[in-house]
Image: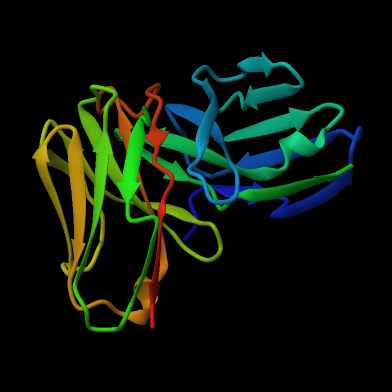
Amino acid sequence: TQLLEQSPQFLSIQEGENLTVYCNSSSVFSSLQWYRQEPGEGPVLLVTVVTGGEVKKLKRLTFQFGDARKDSSLHITAAQPGDTGLYLCAGARAGKSTFGDGTTLTVKP
Amino acid sequence: DTAVSQTPKYLVTQMGNDKSIKCEQNLGHDTMYWYKQDSKKFLKIMFSYNNKELIINETVPNRFSPKSPDKAHLNLHINSLELGDSAVYFCASSQDRDAITDTQYFGPGTRLTVL
């Protein structure tokens, strides 16, 4: 059973388009993190959200934690080829992080 | 001055062999982890050590044995390798064991292929 489900699994868009990636669960998390992983490398943390309803912005990336702390979204405005990668959400419960199944994003120039 | 390093980067071996993967972090962190990422990119925690003490041990076959000689190193030894062990193994570290807000720093991964 996958605790954290991400959608879509794959996304291919043109440079300049906007997109949203979702991370959903039936469980409540103490916090949620988003990571980006490039081919041949390990994941790199983008953001941590802790409070239900919290919104954080990182340049063209906007992260939101659901009010009930069960889901999260990542919105990218005017995507660039450099945004290409695997996006992973990770929820923290009982002192442990559980990762979602990932969204592979390809931004074509 | 790599923060979290792993060796080797690639490992190709025959079924039934025993192999080790080494991990070192120079961040002064207290907690280290091993993750397995399968072909579908699903990242699953295997073990976590805090100050050389095992704190997380997920449902992993006992052919996998982590060893932490000091808090800067966490090695993974795998006995009797099986085809299903083929994956990318990531080492990570964090300042402490608080998964709520702590940042985990990942190594570059070790791609293990069992033939």
